[in-house]
Every structure is written in C-alpha cells, then in structure tokens.
Length: 128
Image (cartoon, rainbow, N blue to C red; front, top):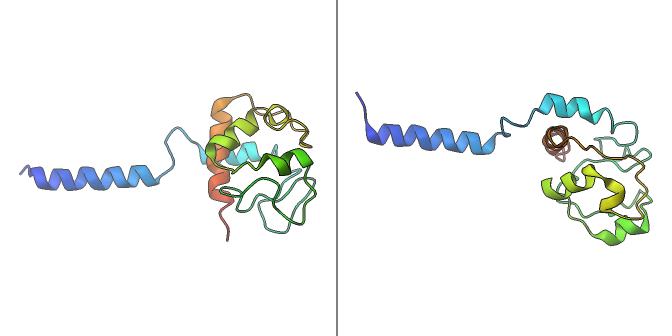
C-alpha cells in the first residue's frame, strides 16, 4: 500500500546517499588510471615526495607548504587552497595557472579525464 510518509523517507534517504557518493559522471577507476601520468613525480603517501611533492592531504592544503619540498617561488606565493575547482584549473594547464611554476607536465585538456582524476585524488589523498 502506498504511504506518502514512507515514500518521502525513502526519497530523503536516497538523496542523502547520492549526495555523499561521487557523481556517477566521475569514474574513480579511470581517475586511478590517469594518475599513472602523475606518479612518476608524485606519491600519494606522506613523506614520499619524488620530483614533485607528495599529494597526501592535498585537498584543503595551501600551495607550497610542505616543508620538506623545494617549491618554486611562484607556487609558494600563489597561496592556492587546493579544492576541486583550483585543482581542475591547475591540471588543465599548470604553467598558465601558476606562471613561473616548476611543474613540467603540460596538463590534461580533456575535462572528463580531469574530473575522474580529481575524484580519484580526493579519495586517495585523504590523510591516513
């Protein structure tokens, strides 16, 4: 039997689950695969910096603040707070987003690939 109250409860619960989950437009596995382009220079683990800094805890962090890494003056002075928007802009064309930065990577022009990579990084870089 149809119950408006039960229906509203189910719809509310479903909305909460969908809001907490990555968007269906984001493919974490494809993002993990795209990270292979990054892992020659970046690690996901604290203290395991390579040519570039480690990315653990990157979301919410201010650019140029890992003490153990020698950043460009441009990235230190940029004071970027890394979130989905700034990461997307940076990964589109790093040299254009931070003029004078040291990152040699040309960027990811494909928006879907960037979104998948960012979704993967958001999960994979949560501090452990």
